[in-house]
Amino acid sequence: MATIRNLKIKTATCKRIVKELHSYEKEVEREAAETADMKEKGADPYDLKQQENVLAESRMMIPDCRKRLEASLADLKGTLAELEEASEKEGPELEDAQATISEVEKLFQTTEA
Image (cartoon, rainbow, N blue to C red):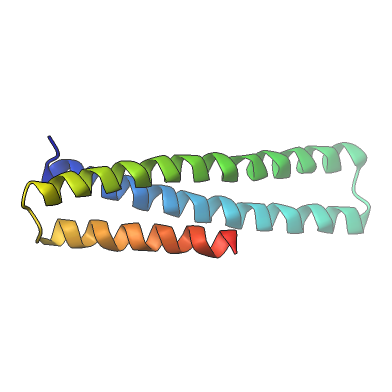
């Protein structure tokens, strides 16, 4: 049985994962710039290799984060549908959940295009 409390939790989870995804994307940009800068300056090969490993790890986190976001979004949609079936169709929590769903779907559309 879905409750408003569960909906709030799932909505917050989606928002947190979106924030995390943006954080990883910024980290990849920052690390890529740093790696390019090190290559330009002719840094020590060992340091350069370590920096490339850091960049690779950051890049690996993005697909993982996307999968978690997809699962969280599906979970949120399911909970929202259950609540709507139980005749709870209004309230700030439901509006927040619907706004989060549209935001995440928009995010997926822009990255697929």
